Length: 64
Image (cartoon, rainbow, N blue to C red; front, side, top):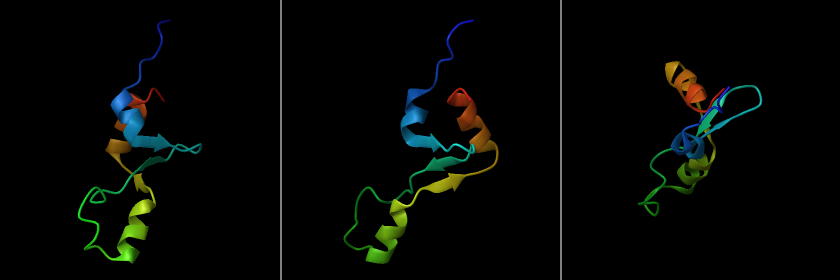
């Protein structure tokens, strides 16, 4: 059997936990941080779960 190739761009952006949940970073944290509150910035550090069909597609792209 040939090796399963994974999408490297997807591998950099998403993480799959041991239980199979797909996590992603929160958007809008790249720039203009000064005008966001500290509470908002702290919340952006926590990864968010991806659900539904998109999570299935991501897992497939990662060879799982």
